[in-house]
Image (cartoon, rainbow, N blue to C red; front, side, top):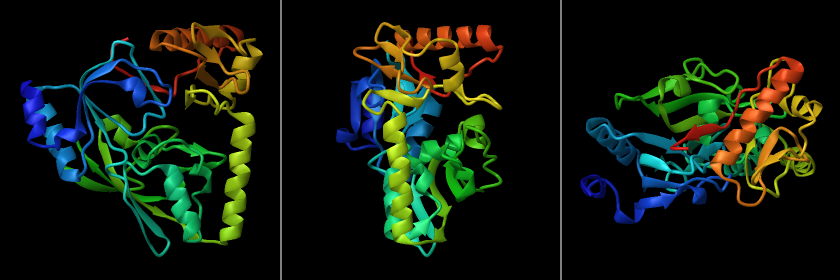
Length: 301
């Protein structure tokens, strides 16, 4: 109750949820209750919440729309800070797009198209927010964030707000200095090029069609479950190991794309974790390659 009182001094009560089921906030549709689920509206509120967590030694984690996330069945002990709809402003100046951490990549892509800006098409179908995309250097179809990012503003663990250039972000395959140092992305600047609106739309539609035909978008999932092994593809290794359609409880290796673990009717986090373990073990046994999960896991399992 003391924590709730402290939070109510920072946030509007409508933006504080107690014992909120995380299954409502992940694309996997899995996860138990978070002690506190908060939705700040300003950078100042984000800074104050993190400061409170530090001072009171309260565990906290940052999420966007939960698209690359698996939360334990027992939930999360601490404060989940969601940077999503409340912090999602997007604006353009020339060939640059300025966007808050909670802005959906699909919305940014739509703005880029409307302004005749090319270079962001690859991200149009990635079901995540800008903050998560910057943190993990999200990519698809030959494009990745480090190709179009100019800079990002972050909060450090010490509560310092600083702006980092794309080089200072140290963007690599599904990693960055943000992930390594537990920074929080507040906003970023994307630098694109002028293009033809019709060509941009055509390319976005082409990528959308490829996703629809090749990915199991009809099922809840967290996107690609495993990181891509160097010189290979996780989905092919899983298929070659005879695991297409393999399931544990409600968790299943997609029959449409073996690189995806899907929630096929009532999967628990325990089901998913066990499936990931068995798939990884079998692939290593068959190929000698160890698959690493790309999905972030938080909470009590």
